[in-house]
Amino acid sequence: MDFVELVRKNLEGKLRIEDGNCGTTHKVLKEISRLGGKAVTWERPDGVYSKIIDDKGNVVGEGEGITWPPAILFAMVEGGFFPKNIEIELTKSLQCIIDMEKVADIYGYGRVVTPVASAYNEVWKNGGRVAIRRNSWGVEVAFIDKDDKEIAVGPISYCPTCGTAATIPRAPELAAKIKEELKDKRNTGKEKYERGIENWFFFKNDRMCCEIKEKGIVMGRALRCCIAYAGVAAEVHAGMAGPKWGALFKEYCKICPVKLCRKGKNTGEEANNLITALEKKDMKTDVRMDTYITAMVKKDGALVGEGIGTVCAFSSLLYAAAKCIQLKAEIEVVRSGDA
Image (tube, rainbow, N blue to C red):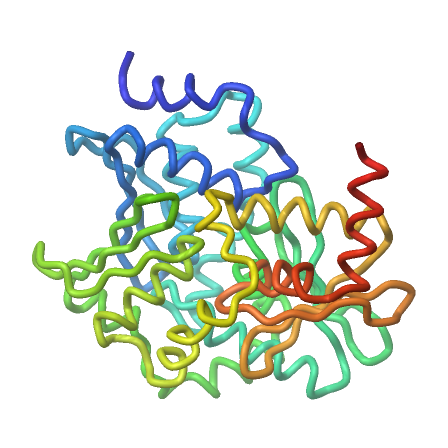
């Protein structure tokens, strides 16, 4: 039995649509890592290119995406790590790949946090809001104006941040404004592309590890709760991240109340299941940018929970669920009702 077949066999019956693209990617990468494999990505002008490497150093999957995590998932799909029925559904829920070039035209090189933060600020500044919701195995994002009308709805995407990045080109005026705003901004992905730097991702002690390598030498390393956060934290360690993001990400783990990876739990899986639970109770989730990405959960228009996170609203949602008594009570009702 070859490497891909073994991973697929070991995960038989363990992959669930409720866990979403993010939870599924981390679950599969954990098994790949357990068997000695890794994922590696490279920034490119139009996004991110990725490979899955087996325990013998062979390439067993290749893919692309608007940033690291969806590129890794696409490489898993192309490598045959999923049964056909799930593979078809995952392909449908990675529609953000279609928008890669349009997303890259705004900022490029697989960098999405900066334009996404700008989008959140612009929409909220004009009295609107940004909503996230589950769709198939993925997440879709909607920009909603002050009159509660949808300005744009993005494709089914990997996670809230990827979904927001893919929604921006569907709001042309907003896209043009953000592109102009960012045209002279430093782009870490561009610097990494020009230097041929690689990002290696694998699980270590139940935590996601990212090693940033230049010519085979490890420049930075970080263990965090997900691919995206580990990647940015590794850039901080390598001295490549901008001072603003570097300072924020160094501090976030200290204040995060969840610590899921230290408990052996999958952050993406937990977050996707949380969104599903909230939607069953007709609760809606909006996202904005304060110092950190902030998720706000509302029921009948009233705020019932708010939390902060790093590169994605998933971490913000989990923070809210852990810290907000009213939201915790609502979730417990859902869970007891489901049981």
